[in-house]
Length: 344
Image (tube, rainbow, N blue to C red):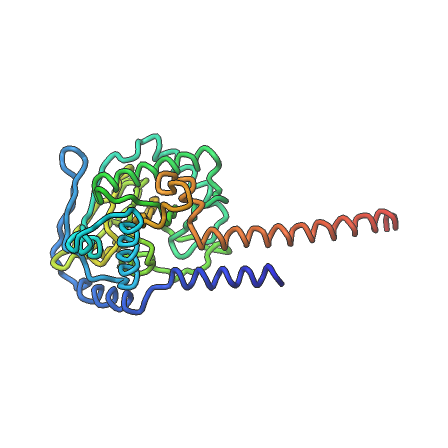
C-alpha cells in the first residue's frame, strides 16, 4: 500500500511538473493553424563549407511567463548573494535577460563508427518494446538497455552536444541535460502484440518548449540518411513565411531554441527506418550551483536527473522486484511442500 501511494504521488508530481500551460498550448495551436497551410514556399537549409551553420531568428512569444519570472528573480538573488553593488541599470539587465533565438546545423557531429555502434545498440535495445504506430522509443536513464559500452558512448555524445550548444547556440550560458530519447520510425509499422497504438501519428507539428516547460534548447542527432535509409521524413521548420527543410543525414546534428520560433515536424515517411537521438537542455540557474556538484558538466549525473521520469522508473523497478521476490518465496515454499508429499 505504501509503495502504491508513493508511485501515485510520484506520478502526480510528474504530471504537475511536465503538464503544459493552457496559454502555451493555445499559442502552439494558433501557430500551427497559421503555418500549416498548403502551397507554402519551401527553403532548403544546408551547412556551409565548414559543415557548420547558424541562423539567428526572431524569438516567438513567451510560453511560460511564470518560469521566466522565477529565472529573473534567481538572477537578482545570485547578484545579491555575491555582494554585487549593482546599479539600477545593471539590475535591469539582470532582471530582463536578452533572448537569443537561433538554429544550428552541424555535419559529421558523430563519426560513422559512432553512428553504426549507436544504431546497432538501439536496434537491440528496442527488441520487445511496445510500438506506437511506426514509432518505438527508449529513455536512456540509469536502467538503460544499451549495455555499459554503448551507454558510455551515449554519455560522451550528450556531453559533446552540450558543449557544442554552449559554444555556438548560447555562448556564455551553462546548460544541463533535462531529457533524452532514442527513437526509431519504421515502415511498415509493427503488428501484433507489440503494437500498442496503431493510430499514433509522430508527424504532427509542435514546439518542444510548448509541451514541456523544462525544454529550452533542443537537439536532434540523426543516425540514418534520407534517401538511403528511408524515404520522406525530412525535418520541417514551419517558419512564418516558409517551410524550412533539413534533410536528415547520419551524423548530422540539428539544434535550436525550443520556442515557437522553431515550430517543427517531420514530413511523413514512405519507406525504411529513421533513427535519431533527441536531446533537450535547460539553462543552469544560479540556484542550481548551490549545494551540489556541477551537474551541467556531468552527462552521467544529467541522465540520472531525468526526473520525474527517473523517479517513477526507479519506483516501478522497485515494485517489480518486490513482487518478483514475493512470488519466488511462495514458489520455494510450494516446492518444499511438494517434495515432502512425494510424486503423484
